[in-house]
Length: 116
Image 1 (cartoon, helix red, strand yellow):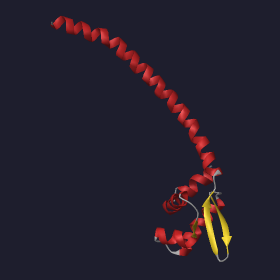
Image 2 (cartoon, rainbow, N blue to C red):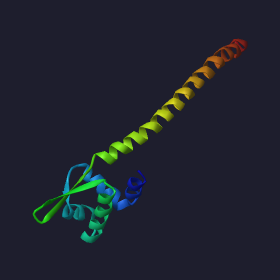
Image 3 (cartoon, rainbow, N blue to C red):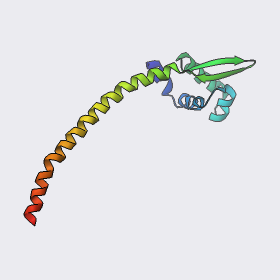
Image 4 (cartoon, rainbow, N blue to C red):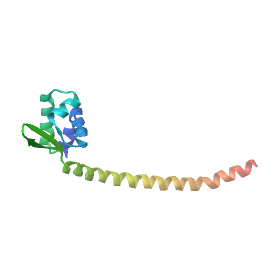
């Protein structure tokens, strides 16, 4: 998981992943869309490949890169544990706020009665 985060925290690599989200691309297409030099893009793709985020499919003299599903499924599972934690906390907060509203309601009605 740490390798995944390390790879994605670099802005150009993150942009490459965002581009690949829409489908496979060649190195040339990525280079053109990002406005980087081909050696820079190749280095970023190497890091993403070593982290298991992308895979390469050679076709003649071109290399086509696409995202691998597994690292993102791992990330989703990890994030899900935090979602459950926060949902439970928000549920407790919601219950507490409802409880506060219920106890304040009779008090506010009494103060309105005094002013009538």
